[in-house]
Image (tube, rainbow, N blue to C red; front, side, top):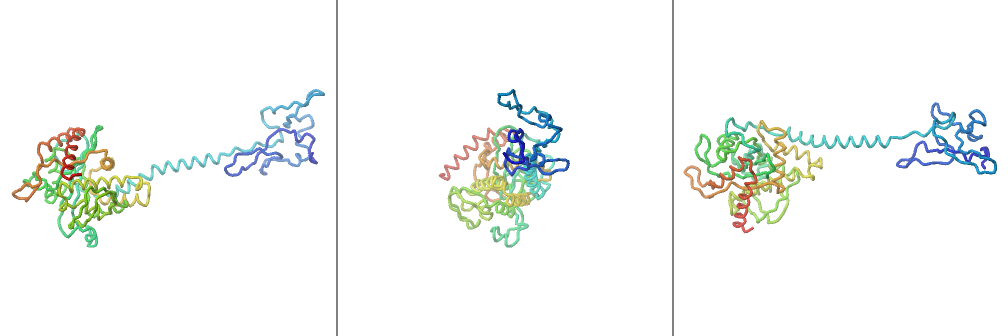
Amino acid sequence: MSEGLPPDADERSGRTYRSRPRLFRRRQELAGPPFLPQRRGTQLRQAEYAGGGPRVGGPGDAAAAGSAVLRGPAGREPERRSPTPGPPPPGAYPPPPVRRRSRVRWRWITLALALLLVVYPLLLFVTAWTSLNRVDALPAGGPAPTPGRTYLVVGSDSRSGLTAAERRRLHTGQAGGQRTDTIMVLHVPDGGGPTVLVSVPRDSYVAIPGHGKNKINAAYAIGGPQLLVRTVEQATGLHIDSYVETGLGGYAQLVDSIGGIDVCVKHALKDSKAHIDVKAGCQTFDGATALGYARARYSDPRGDLGRVDRQRQVLAAIAGKTLSPSVLLVPWRAFPAAASGGSALTVDSGMSPLGLLAFMQAMRAVAGGGGLSLTVPVATTGLQTPNAGVAVQWNTPQANRLFAALRADDTDAVRPIAAAQQAAQQKVTGA
């Protein structure tokens, strides 16, 4: 028995704890006196402990002092009982404080993660939204509103804004003025049907309001976006809800900002005018190569029809890569891509944030194979015209079926048209 301790010190009940447990350890029971810090208003009275325990008023107060040993009748073993729960007797050691520091810490971490999940995508969208260019592209009048949402997607070959070095790098030449290299109609249905992306050959011979018949890209050169929108509405019967345009420089800059795009080339393509030489197979294109691949047509056996297919392929690849986790979850890629993507696009002045989000999601659906991609049905690419040289003539009955389905918002009816067109293309190319 230790010197200075009462005879029953080893039988004294009670538990003691570390006052400050080590990091990531649970509180442990300890033998011996409690290791409590000296706090204001707390008397540890260790001297009393060493001298025989706390004295609460006399030997009769042993039960009040927390003794757990009760002596029974003579000749019997002492009966041990747990102390009755209740307030500690006077002079007893206070219970250890309940620590909630780890729980509070996790609450702050959870709150920070929740804010990050909300603020980060919001900042990305604001960066893209504030970088957009806007133009008054939607004219008054036109067809009555049709179900779903229809976008007119235009790729301009304007060289304005490009430096001499950029023109040499992108091989755009020195042509002046503005024309459309790409014209597409993107229809997003209200129901559960697939999204439909329809390419309109730029040499399509159609009526231009107030200017007779001509190639459809002449509408943009004559009257800008508004006349092009009126021409497309008149030719298709669709009401255009939104307008999205991109230029040559912005097109290439966006591809470079997202680290290039992955494109699977069905046939090797070498075009001296587009300055590209790509082999068959899947590969990664930088901005200049993607632009040349989308613009080449002289070395394609299908001519302008082959080019519009490649334009849809590249545009879908850009949308898919821009909205992929490899870009969105990497801030040093995501924010430059948002700024470049916004500055590369020109939208109508009435475009809303929800309209832009719907456009991005629709393009991603087409890129992922969840949509339908096709060209306006064509009867011939060698139509001789009195004023525009050789042009493209639509297959009127099939084109009318396609646009009637879109006007009715019945995109499922477009599936057989797209399938028949794809089968005909494979027969021509042998792919």
